Length: 332
Image (cartoon, rainbow, N blue to C red; front, side, top):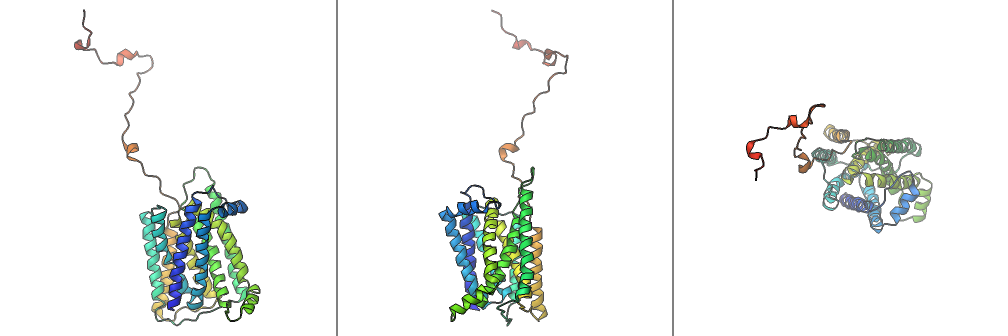
C-alpha cells in the first residue's frame, strides 16, 4: 500500500511538470490544428522543450503501472486527483496563469471530494482485480472514445464561430478526459498482465489482448487533441477538468469492467459516492468562457463631451457669448 501511494505521488509530480513544460513549449509554436495531425506532430518534434515535457509524461505513465498493481482502481484514481494541487502551483509559478475565484473554489471542492474518497478507503480490504472481460471492456470503451471525439469536434466548430466568447477550455478538457479515462482502464489491464518472471508469456498475453491497442489509439489521438487544447486554453483549467472526467470515468467504468466491489459499510459507501457526486457538480459549475478583460484605469477615466453644433440655418456667432469690454483690443 505504501509503495503504491509513493508511486502515485511521483506520477502526479511527473504529470504536472510534463503538462507545464509542454504548455511553455506550445506558446512558442505556430497555431496547431487537430485537423492536420501530421503537421502538428512535426511541429512538436522540432521543439526540444516539448520533447522534455513528453518524456516527463511517459515516466508518469510508467509510474502508473506500479500504482495499479498495488492499489484498487478507485484508490489509485483518487490519489491521482491530488496532482491538481501541484499543477495549479506550477502553472502559477512558471506560466503566470491566474485562476478566478470561482475556479479556485471549484478546485477546493474537488480536493474535498478527494478526501471523502480517500477516507472511504480507510481500513479497506477491497479486491484488486487484474483483468476485465474483453466483450464488456469493448462495450464500455468504444462508445466512450466516439463520445470524446464528438465532443472535441463540437468544441472545434463552436470555436470557429464569429463573435463568440473566448472559451475557457471546459469542453476540450471533457473530451480529452474521456480518452484518458479509456487509457486508464487500458493501463490497469496492462499492469495486470505484466509478469516479470515470464517476459515471453507477458508479450504474448499483451498482443492477444485489447489493452495495448487501446493504449496506442488513446495515446496518439489524445496527443493531438490535448496539445491543441493546451495551446488554446489555460493549462490550469483544461488539465483539472480532464483529470476530473478521467477520475469519474475510470472509477465508474472500472468498477463495472474489472468487477471491483464498492464498500459494504454505509459510511464508506456514502463517502465514496458523495465524493464522486461533488466532483461532478464542480465540473458542471465551472465557467465555460473566459471572463471579459477588465477595463484599464486610463479607459475608465471620463472623456470630455464635445460641444453640440448650432442648429442648421443658425449662424455660429449667435451661439457665442457676448464679448466683454476688457477683451477688446487696445487702440494705438
